[in-house]
Image (tube, rainbow, N blue to C red; front, side, top):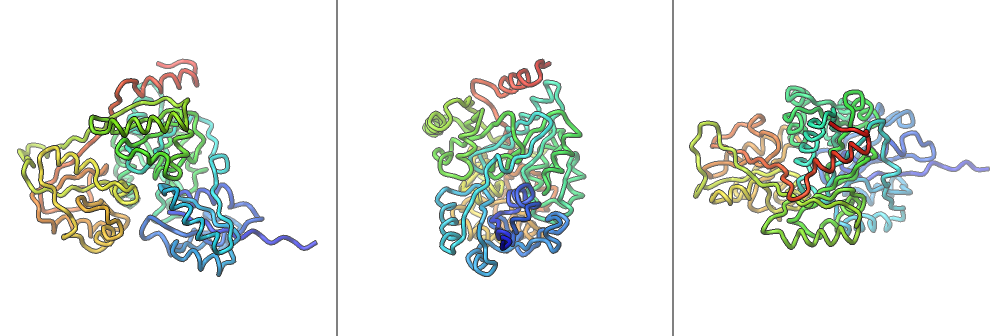
Length: 450
């Protein structure tokens, strides 16, 4: 009998879900040969190799990573049988465009679901995910960690991966201090996610091999908080699933992959940014929830932006020309035209200037790529050169002050030539509180709670 040849697979990713799916589903399967990864969404992560130390014994030379725009030619040249789609925060239409591109070349197109990819923990797990990037998930994660600590637990956070640098070095990452973040040479995007958790007094784990990440985290706490990213679903099976929706983007909870999956799976749906101007948006999301997940508990919340003035400074930005710097992913592939920085500056009476005339290098390329961004500057720092371009753009801007709404303190990373103010925002529930939900979960799981 003729021996069957291994099925030739290509994984379409963005430096996160793609590597996890390979590790848990394909790495040890001799019936499959993963021929390549493709990279999208994130700059500077293609033209690399997934290293042999992570790829395992079946891949002694590692696995090459190519730009996604090479997909059709790769399917032909590598004789691919199946392309596995493995990144997130993508519209349903865009997913099917990618599927059509693959099918037109004759290959199969597939998605791997939670049961195929979720790891099992020996500890209770609470996940915090979202329906879109920029919904306000991170403040919910920080609030959840604080609630758990106040109830006598020792929570440890595990963050969705951002595998943008040295993959071998990033196999397992542990951050408990800001010095550890600096020592690991994290990108700005990584620091934006890890630094607020560390500043709140908690430890966060991340990496590339999440089986190892999970076991390390389990050794340091008694409950795991999965801090989701890019509106992906969790890598670790949750016992309680919290999902954040955005009242500024009603309808998106049913239009994006895998945000709709998260909404359908949620035990608790937090409708964030619920205020006087988003009453209709809140109600539309409620209708979506009642249709897709009628058993989920719904909590409304606000994330009011607050400008923090420099200590001892009388600076006021009313009537002043201001450059608003926003969290990068929120306004790039998250699709928002502005964020908390713009909103806070506008509320303070500032005259907000466009970054377009001043954009340098890779920042100009980013603004060209995302033409919906006209009035704010995305904080991009996937490399040292890009961070310098961000610094040069800010310094070239003709304005009186800069308002930073980035989770990380950018002034630790760049030097600017004008006054700076920071915008902070936390989650504030309206009606039922998150701590009530968490306390009931702990009582059901452990039997008693402080």
